Length: 125
Image (cartoon, rainbow, N blue to C red; front, side, top):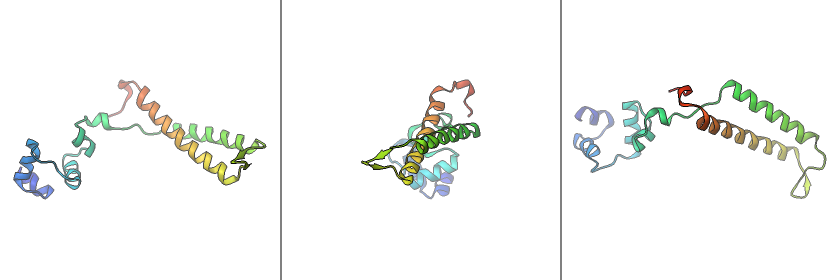
């Protein structure tokens, strides 16, 4: 406890109080503890196993799929006549805003689907 206290910058008695639950560390101390034990702050707070806290990432293929979908949406937006936004013809800036929002939505959906539907045996730890 003394060694850990020195490393994270608190007294040995404070480390003991953390262990017994009589005291809780502040955020800076949690960051130092996470670095020391090589775990996330989320793991320290919730006790989830590190493999459960790992979030899926987009692969190059996922990014290409999203880019293709966005290109198709952009073409549709540009070729449609009479698109209106608040009673006025849609500006190029409005179209770009819609595409940017769609990109974020597609990325979030892809990540959520990976998290939800990837079988455990294929998840990488």
